[in-house]
Length: 84
Image 1: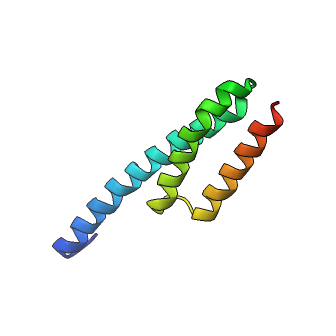
Image 2: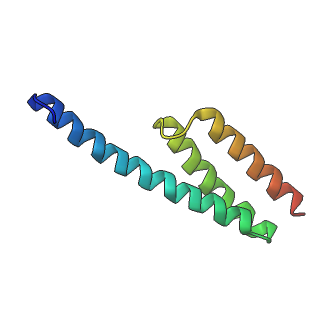
């Protein structure tokens, strides 16, 4: 167990951040999954900016790597273009 007040506080902060990051990562993964399940191109075209924004936000906050976000955005865009 931690012996210093600062380390106890740091443990509390870390746990709070971990849960916060886990929630937003899960929400984004669900959105990506929902996008991949779409069959209609018009619906996908409307939903893509929302998913892209979520991925950019996660990358900006360091929850996922920026290259992972770029790769996901690229693959989702290619998938949408193939729906035609």
